[in-house]
Length: 291
Image (cartoon, rainbow, N blue to C red; front, top):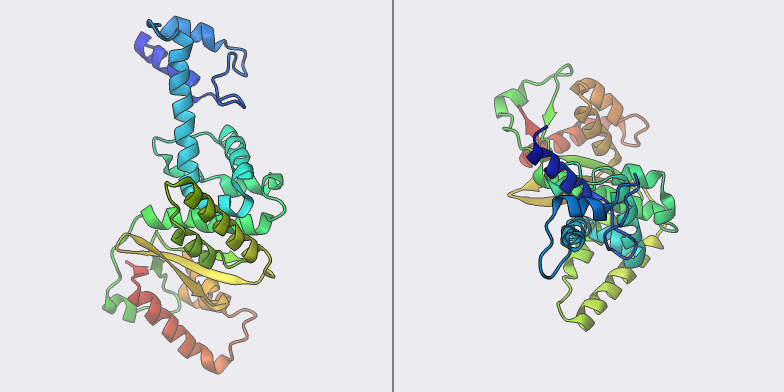
């Protein structure tokens, strides 16, 4: 290993190590390494700051950037559980799942999985919070996932029961218990303000809206998230829509996917053909089918 690479790795290890509860740099890391000794070895002091203080600046700014990015990705979750609990959750989650990518886009990729075994951070609104995490992460994926070339009319006309239909990589479908799609749209309409009193009022309104949704009885809600001209849209689905799209995404041939969609369905047999015709026409017009 070159001397430069070794220094880079030592600096990175120091910068990426979690902060103290007071958001300062730890004097000693979990593995016993002294950050002061490391700083003295690789960072020159100046006439104003010691080696440790210079390194601490980068350590703090690194973590403040992660906190800020995480908050930008999950404002709905913060509205549901409140600022204080959200801050505690953020630090605990990012300690367990620190950034592993050059892109901060992936910070929340493990959040739902992590929360399922750390529900104490989102009680007493755990189910609503989980629904919010699902839609906010799906929104991120729908926004920046790939877009494939559309299937042409001739290919679409030639499909049969054994054919496989491919869907846009950015399309996401969710099964939810709360109308978090409506909630998140309302929350985003509360843009806030740089003025402290206006911003506090906006936060209070967001919390009231979240409390209202939390008080609703859970129900079955099916939702698609899709993209058009760099904007993400939400579209409510029927149970059959959701099951059909999920089956197609799983690679099932059309015939089997249709059977899956109508298992336990209340749609009468004689109405199913027209249901499918409308569904496929709608999804085709939205550009969901690809080559």
